[in-house]
Every structure is written in structure tokens, then in C-alpha cells.
Image 1 (cartoon, rainbow, N blue to C red):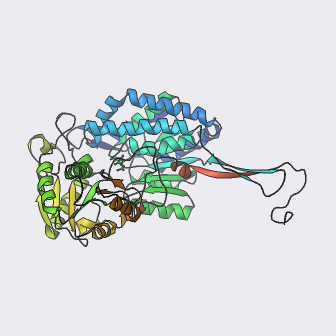
Image 2 (image 1 turned 180 degrees about the horizontal axis):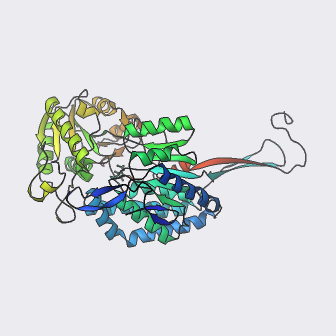
Image 3 (image 1 turned 60 degrees about the horizontal axis):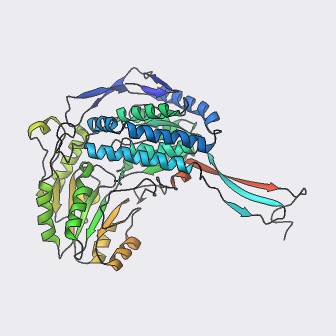
Length: 490
Ligand code: UN1
């Protein structure tokens, strides 16, 4: 398995590699991928800089034609690619197909937006003069992403960046490199010119070389808050534009008037879908005291019936493994912390039954009696661990939800329209769901969070184009005289 630079599949100049392993069956080695360094990144950035000269001049709708074809190829290769993704990162085939569908939606949306990259015109304050503004491509974009959405999250960044006329150097997670190579194959088959999109595999060494390279003008990052903040600090020092999507500690509130079955299905999906490894996962459940005990009884019953397994060999599997040994250790250590802070009412162990002993499986785990000061209430675990707190009123529930360093997603289950709209107004998060779980973002809506989750940018929707373009303001004076703004007309 190789890097993809300037339309060629090439080895790293280091000659070093890392193994990509199936987390559901760790003896299954998918392949050895290049462990790239700054030299490899420099080659990719040079290719992307050269390709930018022609790509930025291709009319945007023509760029969109290529993205639309890419959407068609993602559709054609959906089943095959889903299997590759499940093999390298573990979530079930149903979920990996959904992941690819997000990229398909993003491709078609971005293709359409190439005919709409609207600017603004405004009247001039002088006669015989016109004012207008245009979105301009910026140059080489460095894209660094996590493994939990190996196709969807890269597509949110890469496809709009290309639509705007930028070129890209992409460093995928070293836990999901194979999906990234198929991403490159698809863009190549769609007709993307060589050098416009490049993939450099590796770890933080390659990632920081991208951030540091002087010709990388924009950095788009999805991953941990620690890494994201370090990238932002470097981008600040180097005067680069940077867009961050980082951690979450998302809460679902359930009020006594809610549809309880709906709320239970919501939290099961929000907390244990993708094995809890989403930045949008429901990791805190805030239950009104009036329904707390009955809700917990039914939730634990249904959560205990979830089937853990290898999504490729067990068609019944609903919850896959966690991604790697490091995450397994981290999640298990948080479970130990939880046991010392609160009450474990479900799970709490690694799952070693049958074939699951060959992978990194963790039982869906639920803690009750969680207080706002507890580490399992405040810190992102990124695994199948749900912390439940009790609220005595609506205001108390909102205050618990807002007691977080993060602010990505949020949810409330209630049939009271006043409570729903108050929650929309008062919950501190980039996304609020009413009667739906904390996960389920759609490609054409802004995606991102406040507080420790991000730095003010939004991917998805029309807002992503603010990341990948700079404004050019144009004044056309057809008066034939010198008209001095602010001076001659007052
Ligand atoms: C992420 O976890 O990084 O709304 C993204 C959702 C998905 C995207 C999650 N569509 O959960």
C-alpha cells in the first residue's frame, strides 16, 4: 500500500511502514502503509502547488462535474468500500454504508454548489462605479482526519475544498488508511487531474509536516482536542487559516412528558452506535427524576440485548469493536474511574466471548448516580460508555447539559413545545436535536461546535465554503475621472 502523490502510487522516502489491523480480529493485517516524513509531504505539497495553477482556472461548474462523477463512483463501489471500512475500523456494514452515503451526498451537494458559489454585489457610494465580491480559492489545503468516519469526514473537507478550486494534501488516520486510498482511486477515476488531490500516510510526523509547510495555506482538522489545539497554536504562529472539529461530551435530556420508547431508542443509537466512537456520540444522559428509575430499567434491558461482534462475519452484530489497543486501554481505564465515582448498572468489562476475544470489544456500559463533578461526566471517553445524571427540573437539566468544556451536539426529548424551544435557545452547542438522538448530521447543514469543540468554523452545508475561500472585493470605476472614496462625494 502506498502514498498517492501527483497521480502516482509511491512509497515513502523513509522506507518505513506501519501495519493496518482489523480491530475485530487483530491477527488480520490489512496491509503495510508508508510511514511518511517531511520529505514525502514536501513532494505532495509541491505537486498540489503545481496543480493549483490550472485547477483554480477550471470553471467551477466543470470542477463540479468531476465531483458529481465521483459521487456516482462512490455509489457504484459502496458495498465493496463498506467492507474495506468495516475491516479496518470495525463499525458494522450498515454504518459504513451510511458513512459512504454521507460522502455521496456531499459530492452531489458540492457539485451543485459549484454553480452557486455566490458573491455579493452592493451599490457604490459614487456614480459610474460598481462594487462586487467573489469567493476565491486559496491554494493547497492540508486535511488531517480521524478514523471513525474514514470516508464521510474527509469528504466534508476535501470535496468542498476541491469545488472551490483548491488542491489538497490529505493525511488520513493511520487507523483507516485503506479507505483513503480508495478515496484517491475514486477521484482519479472521476477525472481529477494529477496533483490536485494527494494522500500521504503516516502519524503525527507527517501531520505536523503538513501544518508546518509554508505552501499549505489552510489546515482542516478533525480529531482530539489536544492535537487540534496544538495545530491551532502552530497555525496561529504561522498565520494560516485553520478549521477544527474536536471533542464532544454530548448530552441527551429526557423530560417526563417525552415518548419514552422513542427516547430509549434514541439513546441506544446515540450512545452505542459506532461503539460510542463519534464526536457526536451521546455520552451523557440527563434524566428527569420523575422517570429516572423506570427509564434506566428499560434502557439497561434493551442495551444488554445489543449484539457485539465482527460486522463482516456476524450479520447480527450491532456494535463493533473499538479501534485499537490504546483506545481499549483508555476506555477500560475510564470504566475503572467510573466504578470509583458512580454506579455501574450495565457492562463494565472488555467482551471476550467467542470470536470477540480476537478483537477490541467492550461491553456497552452504563453508569448511574453520575455527578457533574465526576470525570466520567466531564471527559470525553470515545467508547460505549454512557454517564447518567438525574435532574430535578427542566432548568436543572439544561444547567447539567451546559456544564461541559465541549459544545458539539445535544438533544432533548419532550412533547412540550415551550420546553423544546427554550432548549434550542439555551443549550450551549453547535447542534440541538428535538426528539432525535445527538447523532444524525446531514451533509447540507452546518456541522460543528462551540467551546472546546471547535474554533468557530462550520463544515457541511454552505458554511464550509467560508473555510475554503477568501473574499476578493472588486470596484469597477467607469466614470473616467478620479473619484476619491470618502472625500469627493461628501
Ligand atoms: C463525527 O463523529 O466525527 O451526525 C462525525 C453524525 C455523523 C457524523 C459524525 N453524521 O453523527
